[in-house]
Structure formats: C-alpha cells, structure tokens
Length: 154
Image (cartoon, rainbow, N blue to C red; front, top):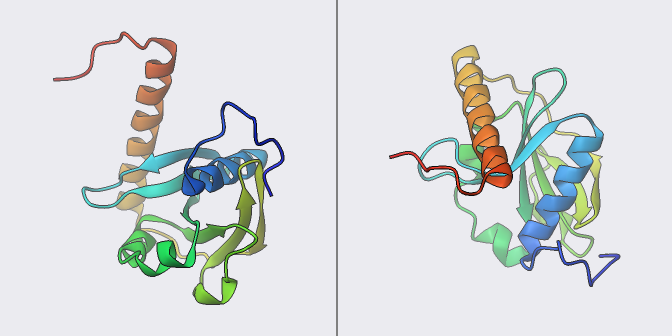
C-alpha cells in the first residue's frame, strides 16, 4: 500500500508507518494529533488527537494479528478518550477487532475511517488534565525540533 518506498522520512516499523498515515488523516480533519503519548505511567498511546470540537480521540495502530493479540492494555486506554479507534493495514483481519470500537484503514501516507467510534464523553476534570498534558508535550516536542540544544529539565 505504501506509494514511495524510497521516502527518507518513512519510519522503519510498521506501527509507526500506520501512525504517520493516521496523523495525516487526522490533520486533514483539523485535529491536532501527536504520536507516542503517555497519559499515565504504564500506558503509551500510538496516536492521540484533539478534534475541533474538543473531543479526545485515541487511535491504536496494529500491524499484525500477533501485535493485536499481545496487547493486554488497550481497554485501559478507553477512559482516556471520547472516541477509540484501531488503525490497521489492508491485510489485517478486521474481524479480530471489537465491533464497538472505531476502525481506520491506514498506510504510511494516509488513512480512512471505515467505522466511526462511539462517543463516550470523559469526565471534565480528566479532559482538562489530559488537554493540558497534550499541550505541554506538543510544545516541548516543538521546542526540541526548533532548538535541539535547549536544556532538559532537572
């Protein structure tokens, strides 16, 4: 499904390729998305985004059946989002994925929502904290790109 195999910006790992395509699609929907986000110790989200309406979406990228079946934490992610999606490539067996979650078909260059995720609103206090944490991490990452020599805290 990848269109430009010689692309020097293309990540090596299949999950990162899916995350890149998902982030591109989310941006096209006017979401602010970041990859590899940790809402609390022990949980690492592949992609999290804030929609124009303020909804928090989580997208977990699964590159294979084994990747999905070995994931024991995904249900813990639900309390950190308003909508939860899986992103998989065209070869993934979709029937493995729970039907009460969203489904995105992706590759490294884009993605498409095949099944919308149900809306389950987070508590206000959690949303406030999560939005603040997303903003802080995004700002720190941006500064690291524009000023790689900036001092690290502590």
